[in-house]
Length: 124
Image 1: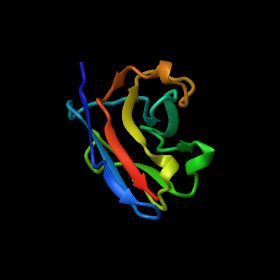
Image 2: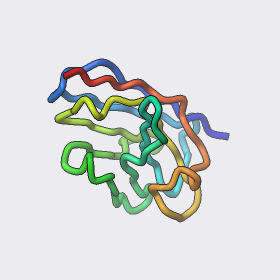
Image 3: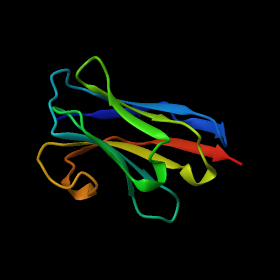
Image 4: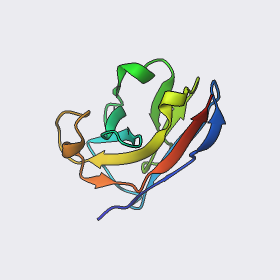
């Protein structure tokens, strides 16, 4: 079993930045993909970004392309989400997820482990 713990959420004004971190409990953890999802009140969980753990290729939902950056930490068990030019519509609980198999990186069902989430609130 692997636990994922997110941190870095908070309250920020529109146009500001936050960096989310996700730490996996196992230092030698080797997933296929790591992803970030978000869920706003009354809405379904939405894909935000993913990174292939071996090759480093990344994918983003169109609404965050050019504003958010997903990256791996220097240690093998950390993934980050740098969020710039934040908008009120980015307000949500952000979840880190790890997938052990190949598949559609934007589909929640293919991820095997999930964190508890961290709240991001962007004020206008």
